Length: 497
Image (cartoon, rainbow, N blue to C red; front, side, top):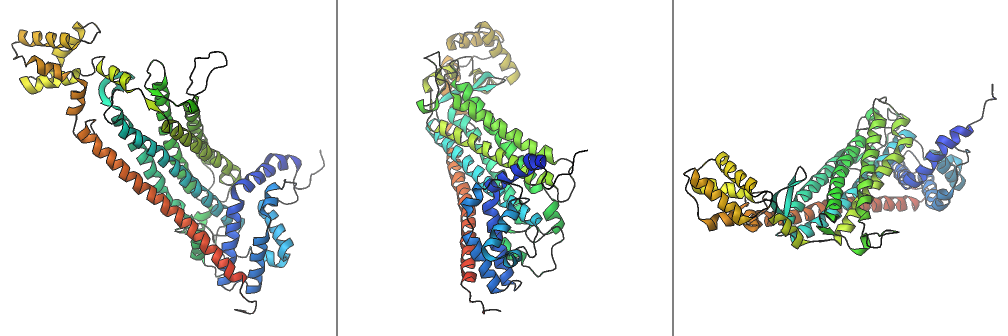
């Protein structure tokens, strides 16, 4: 039997504690220190710590060398970043004063507060990137609102629409993504601080005060749930999964449109790569990267959900430090995907001439020919469909408006159905006429589409204002916290003693 190791055992240090330490420095140091500031201010306001202790602790926090902390390599002399910070503060203001910072709190409620602070920043960044992509799509939808393009069902050309109408569909998808991101905020932005280990504390702390100083909207009230609940995290990851699924579908569509066979989309030179052997290649590689990044982010967020399945309802490492790096990776990849796609589409152009040619072929307008027969002759759509289907078959796969109209007219006459004017039937097969007639809400006609693009612009402004409000909320709270810190640092020791 090997001799017993001392803490930390080398394998435990290398496989767990050291990676967690590095992640904590990168992800949580700023939030951890903000929590320290807010907690010290609250303890002073509640008379739990004296002004002298408060001023010394706040001065030590101000003098803490954050750069040196970030450069520190884990050596096992302390358990984690929290204890390293406590050790550094003790060196600055004395162990007695530094130890009082931790009055009426636990690493448990500190950790959950840090996680929420960082996650709300990730949600806002994801929301902002989604807005940037929407802005690009709105610009393109307005620019190409009247440009005909085939609409596809089952990956086959189905009916004519416009590029603006197609892009507007994605804009609505991303509007719903934004709505889902906003919807998590009231549940995410709640403070667990004050829950302590899991049952609060006997000290008369002011939980709402620390919540306000840290820009939370309120409390995660029940202390047991504040520590044990993980739905704040799973909900955000579920929103991320849905968002990335939508991003991946757009990236795939744009890749398809970039192929030589489609030739609808052309990326700018800044967003294409060539081949090491084939000089003619213009590979839309950034779209591929956007697609894989979206897929990575989606599966990483799903992995977070899977890691939390059937975990105990308690303070458990499963939902804490070991998992938080995976959450960060998921949001980082999601941001990369959205920003890359927005950048590529911001400089992209569409082959309007070729899209129109494709929309004018492949029998895409024949539904309107059947509709016209119904409107002008009184026959049922089932009958009209049969006449038009017969004409399509007679054309042997080669769309010809004149031949289509001749075939339909002969079929109508043979069935003793009044034959509408030839010009009317020819016009029914015109692409622009097809689009113009589809003017009910949601359609591609200018009468229906243009107001929707205007609505999307207004919705963008509304959504952007929400983001600005949340950013202002965070910065205002940070300013208020700093003001409170400065006030207590300048308080004479005898005041309030």
